[in-house]
Length: 258
Image (tube, rainbow, N blue to C red):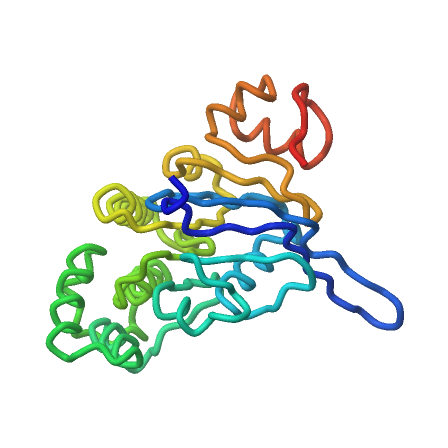
């Protein structure tokens, strides 16, 4: 049903100007639809356009051509309404080291005007969810990189967003911590019907988590589908073969979506 589509782009293009008469096409006529409750993986080599696409969808960049809608609202004309319902966890995000884990969540949620009572209840639930309840009153400056990443995941969720954009959410997290984060994302999708847009270079993580994936290469969306569907379409043994073949042009025997 059309109401199930929470993100849609048509001919979405972004061109950056670099010096005199030099242009870089970061996104090239991308058509994409993402459904409510999906964990959708955005894959591509560095510079493929993944971050540019996400930044347009959350209003940090303006498209050069084409259009994009999030939750039925235009990313240019109605971005304030969109920002109230989406959360972004960029790879380079940082925590407030002098605050405790709980204070990081409550402070961030307070910026959105959430009541103190609601914030404390949400913080309780999220600290339990990411396994940091026993460290909630410790300053974050003493946390490992993986523990800080868990705080960031919880912080992104404190506003109860309908859509969560996560760039490499398990970066720097140990094996057990990464499992916790994946379980959180899986629960958000399956039980709460939140939509997760995930970028990662870990293709095992993609195969485990993602309902569908989109592969970007040189700004073009070259394939979209379930991992198993793409493996069958491109006659590949696994998603890594699909990805490598589409990016390098070697070893792919099916057609390429344009």
